[in-house]
Image 1 (tube, rainbow, N blue to C red):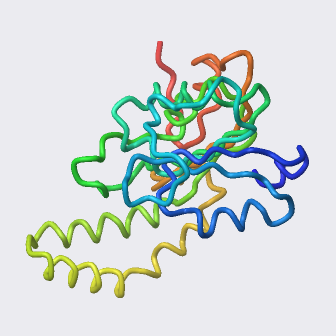
Image 2: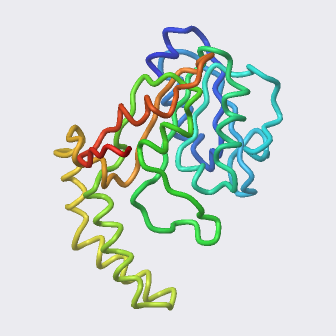
Length: 224
């Protein structure tokens, strides 16, 4: 994404649900050009420029050249509405980078609502032409998460749960490195822990049949 924006000139980038990403994301995106980043979130503990709700972004249409949203839309009540808002504030030809969890356990308690397969992720941003998509984290990472949460199911106390996490992570951390072997295998996509989507805002949304035709995975089915 940064390489593409560097070729477009000095861009203005909106970060939706930024948390405390500023410290590493700004140096990353400004490595070659002085892109301006606007950080937004609703969390009072976040490091932001503007506190606002992704369902109703307080910007005029076409305000930004790019939007970044990572591990955010699983925590909103109406992901499709937030996706439409992201599209609205992006200019035509603007760039979107999104990451969404698929095979992951709850990680924000009561504020954790939704999971998306890669096809679901693609459909959520159907107003974008795809540049690239795939696994941000694969089935090996999903397996480690599952083992950890299996262990946590036996404990309720804060200290006991922390100890269980430490033990599981020490014993099984190495499993996640299998994802480097699986990242280019379509068969692994059906069990991905997290997927990414990189796209350009388009005047014409992609249709559902096209999304089905471009499914990436092992379970190719044909429904009548």
